Length: 291
DNA sequence: CGAGGTACCTGACAGC
DNA sequence: TGCTGTCAGGTACCTC
Image 1 (tube, rainbow, N blue to C red):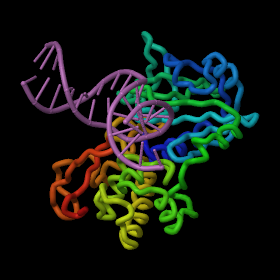
Image 2 (image 1 turned 120 degrees about the vertical axis):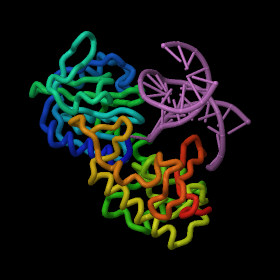
Image 3 (image 1 turned 60 degrees about the vertical axis):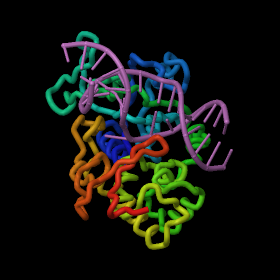
Image 4 (image 1 turned 120 degrees about the horizontal axis):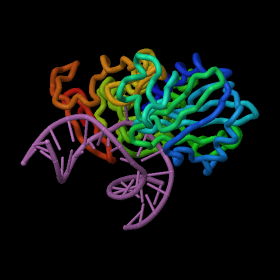
């Protein structure tokens, strides 16, 4: 997924469906997806009868707080997304029982399925099988290095302009790369970094040391704006991401830069350009966003 | 320490 | 039609 708005959309969708539900059983055709514990049989045994007490998000991680102080962590990586509903096994493939958005082709790569105590299922569809799932004591998760090192949550009230500047200070690289660093700010990926930089009129390759106060302020506001809009619209779905009910998010109508190479800038009419650095594509308007 | 590459996977799509 | 190369919302790990 999916970045912060998509993860948040998933969390909200699941909260309205599976809170207080208990895990009955689990199936997978890709057992490697479970990173903790290492043995799938152990995962299956330990998860059984655990009740979902809370579902929340930290950066792009989804966390199910379970009974007995356990947690189930899901990171959807590039193409994973969690779905809720009813499926039946048909010639080796899980098919939705009811007609509707779950039939979307993006929802058919089911590699992990949980049976819940209300007879419904929670599944993970993941074309590229990059997603990861971990089951452990909540304390162990919260105290893990990967978790503790995550940067601040950009949509939290305490993410002030001062805190934003403080977070950026840790780095010296190109601004886009810094924005996508989960340990600087948690939750921003390729789409929303491109979008925020477009709104703030900042070139993605600009070194953060060269940003003046005014640019920093614009960027700070742009980040909050695009992420909030993303959440409000239920995320971006032009590619694989789908909401827990299988339907698409609506952020696509707001996309100004990402994947718009060669198309007109909505602000000045110049052609959006694509460049590649640090292994990712950056999209920007060469006229509005100058180095 | 930072920068860059690779690995993990599969499917869609463009070009020949 | 079919083959080949490129690309994809992420992140961990390795080397230089």
